[in-house]
Image (cartoon, rainbow, N blue to C red; front, top):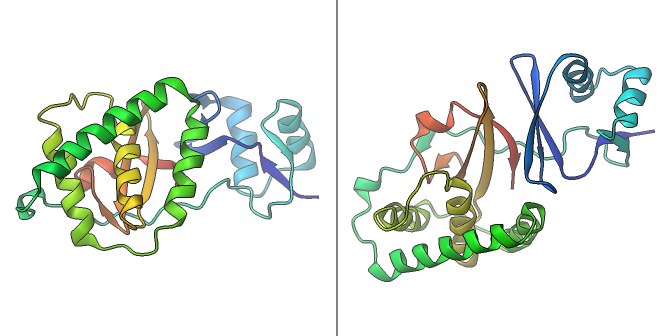
Length: 213
């Protein structure tokens, strides 16, 4: 029989601990001690039958037909970031669209579960078939310039969802990534292949991916 992490729960191992992101409740949990040890064994495919039973009793693991215990594929390892100074021609109308997209994303996240928003984004992104770094760079630059008009404090998820939606509508295949680090902090960013569109490369390297589309 195959066992999997329960739906909507995504996990990441960091320094002997396990961090969980429950998309249904939009909450993070830092697992320690015996829970972290058992979850770590499960993620490494080395959990004993008694450990699996223990995790099932606590609602962390369930029967499933997935052959892999990890709930999502990791994104490509980032190697570079966009140099916004090199993007000179950014239409003002695109900056306005970036502003509007963020306002819409913020409204959506305030009214609906994160899981539903990400499921809809995943469906939209499946229709994107190509990744054109030049085109992605112009959109990223528009969002960068929009920071003059919107506060960016604790808005990385809003910005990420808004940018991913806009790029998906343009047919660009990108990755939305959520990462965590300890002492606990979480961050969301957008990648086009291995190029980060929303942040400096050094910033995202401080985080371990816990979820990606």
